[in-house]
Image (cartoon, rainbow, N blue to C red; front, side, top):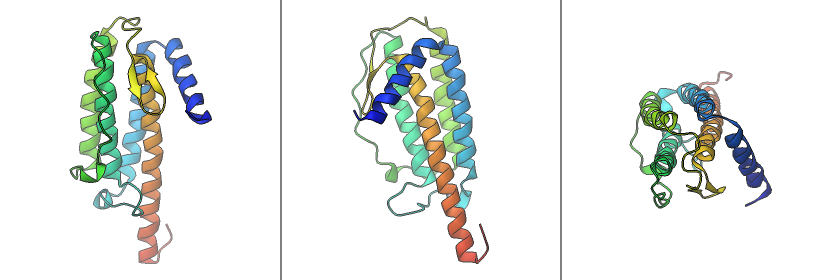
Length: 180
């Protein structure tokens, strides 16, 4: 773990211990709104287009967010149910994701998360204190730390989507000869 990863892990541990599950859920919901706004800023006709060959498209970003949320949300549910966390799945191939609109991806994420939030808000806040969800960069996290991580993950990818929207707008205006 590098210094930046250690700093983020420290934040997750400290804040998850301090915040109630309801407060964490509200933070995640706010980050989801930012993610949705950023996704909707990507031109719909170019949502599956990569701004550069080595970068993800908006479609690939949201496919990744939904797949990662399935793993981390499933880990939280397992912890709350007293089950061991499932194995970490191999990194998904986002380039093979179905092409969907930003609205469709965001609606799927909202459905998935609202079911998770219902489980979290219905659980004892001190439940599954020993349960851990494995994170490839931050190591084992408690369910509360993992839930808070989803906020950071959404915000990180909202920033990525904003950059995609800007790059596609700049490329579109360069082709038309008009300023972005």
